Image (cartoon, rainbow, N blue to C red; front, side, top):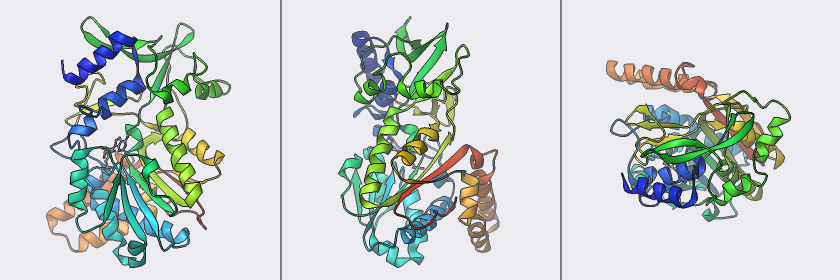
Length: 374
Ligand code: SAH
């Protein structure tokens, strides 16, 4: 058993079955053994590949978006360009290169990165050599006062979720338990909650508040229906929305997900480019859950922000001109490079690949027009 598994086992022995959110939190973010703390998960030698690692065109389109958004915010002379979960720094490097055509923007924008992984911070520093970059682990540490333009690709899917399952006419929370010498998924009751966000979700035991609201409309009560909520994600977004309201700004979130809450178990683990069980390779496999954008859009509306989208990644990239960009790159490409450009364009925009599964949500406060791409 690995040191991280020992830690999880000890907690289960002490407190009872562990909620999925706490489990994800330990597997991904344990300060010493968490998946994101130890290694570079990206690319061929890692576990998975993301859009900016597939092609420079992805980050370039986000650069075009950022410049346009900055103009719509009134071209402030100082602003913050924040990327959350920047991976290897590839997206930001491509984004800044694409923004070179707008030197006033580059002059105004201070580059800030939200990142917890020491390994990835090093890679980001390397990719962004020559730029002045500030790192933060917590959104609250972002300097106040200036408008913020936020970009995030595959960041929200790493934030912990909770799961609920219908069985025998009642709802149970799902958790992790240890039985017959292995970790298994259990149905509640679960142990006490060590994460305050998860405690808040449970003020009314049984179904959490968010699902109770849904229950009045169209909650499926089929046997074994599973619903997911993410107090951690909603809490994080609420904090960002407050910040955007204080200083003005906008955000762009790209993730595998959906625009309407629906039943389904979307927690998944990927190890070396292959799916594995979520309780296998704990701390060695990437764990994610699809993003339910519905509560995030509702929350933005409630707070008085403008919401743009949801739209599909292909429509977003096309609206920003990815086809034209590919044409330009093809002019200068040798036959091998041309093949790569065609393949990358296809992978990013084909509905059967990333084009339709990945969704894009924009939010803004103080923009004078609809944001580009929607
Ligand atoms: N956006 C990049 C990487 C996606 S992987 C890309 O598209 O290639 C997820 C990223 O989020 C990693 O950089 C990971 O270290 C970071 N991350 C995960 N949980 C985080 C958290 N709670 N706070 C800050 N960063 C986090």
